[in-house]
Image 1 (cartoon, rainbow, N blue to C red):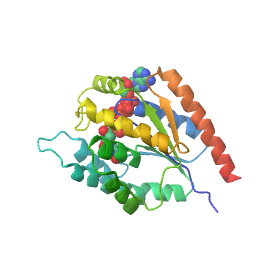
Image 2: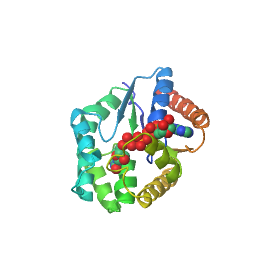
Image 3: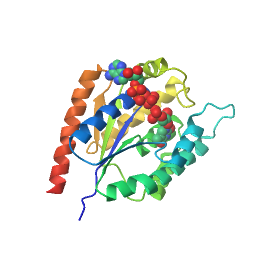
Image 4: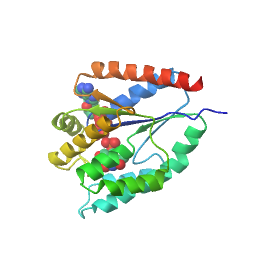
Amino acid sequence: MTARGLFITVEGGEGVGKSTNMAFLEERLRGLGVDLVVTREPGGTALGEELRALLLQPREEPMAAAAELLLIFAARAQHIEQVIEPALAAGHWVLCDRFTDATYAYQAGGRQLPVSLVRELEQLVQGELRPDYTLLLDAPVDVGLSRAGERGELDRIEREQAEFFERVRATYLQLAEESSGRYRCIDASRPLDAVQSDLQGFCAELGQCWNARLG
Ligand SMILES: Nc1ncnc2c1ncn2[C@@H]1O[C@H](COP(=O)(O)OP(=O)(O)OP(=O)(O)O)[C@@H](O)[C@H]1O
Ligand SMILES: Cc1cn([C@H]2C[C@H](O)[C@@H](COP(=O)(O)O)O2)c(=O)[nH]c1=O
């Protein structure tokens, strides 16, 4: 029987270096010789990418927090059915740039929607599916926002106030503490080579976990 693949998610606030380090992780994990599917949320399917564009486009009409939450879970339902579940079942690893921890951080933490609402939708849309490992790239909000700002125009969510992102960061740190078995937290405010040296250690740990799973 094929061993189910590992589901690895990468999380963090704006500008912490997710994109830069996703590329690094992808290269190192492929180097381990595993079949890897790299994807992102919101997105990862044609429908999901359309929903992402709707979510991130600045708009005059404010988006209701509940509308934002439901669009995110709609994209996630499609992503799970079309990409994530089939890949894991076939024994591929899935490396996903953000998943439901982002919903806890941004919609429950940032937007202050009830956590119970996120939990109910998580159960409805995901059933038992949860990440095996979550890498949190953590940096002070001002460090991330200034890096994100250097990239050019800000999207709808990046335009939020600093207090919103402080709540996002605090929620991520709380999740990392509550789920310390699954989380690896990396100080992303350091120079890139220090961050990537820790990422290298994380990849080695994943390789060992996989070998143990294969017996
Ligand atoms: N450790 C680091 N030290 C200094 N600069 C960094 C570091 N990591 C990333 N950067 C730079 O910060 C900027 C933002 O990085 P990146 O786009 O990877 O962040 P991100 O978290 O994916 O952002 P977002 O999620 O908002 O798209 C880029 O210019 C990148 O080169
Ligand atoms: C999955 C997810 C994402 N978001 C927000 C977080 C970011 O502002 C954008 C995604 O863009 P990035 O390139 O990954 O930075 O969407 C959210 O609010 N809730 C979620 O569940």
